[in-house]
Length: 218
Image 1 (tube, rainbow, N blue to C red):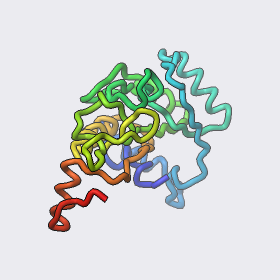
Image 2: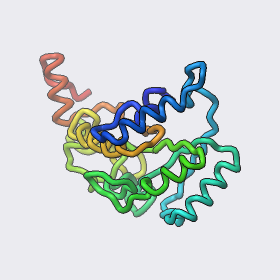
Image 3: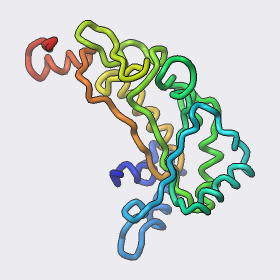
């Protein structure tokens, strides 16, 4: 993992003064005498997926038992998914609204806010999985998606569409990063973004500005 990504919650508070202070304290605590932070050492990471079912461990007691079990199995970090919509419903892709942390776009509950302090109390690092490439057609307006030369949104896999990191999706991502960064997470795994060739308005305008001509269709 890129150390800059792993340290995102410690190095940047995204406007939350309370987490700035605690983040710096955690950073100093994470450093050994030789100056190596936790992400620079051996880490045993648990990766899991609930396959569309909402986790039942919603109360603090049950979460505590789950976290203790994870630690007893030898894991000291985990890859936590906080949006389950990708595996739900008939249409593939993230719906962009069923997040389990407080944000400005769509929140079903604050599971992350309950989970984090319990995980940290038991010494479990939390690296949040965040999808930034595969969404449902209803998640955004057409200008957010990767478009083919005919102006049709491109299916990445299944029935989910790919989003373009050059268009308005970039600003949406920035705001979501700010909201997620207000939590004392230990890192973020960014799934994506797309490297597909895109013919949306933003990409065509960038191409024209760089090369002084229209983007060719092939």
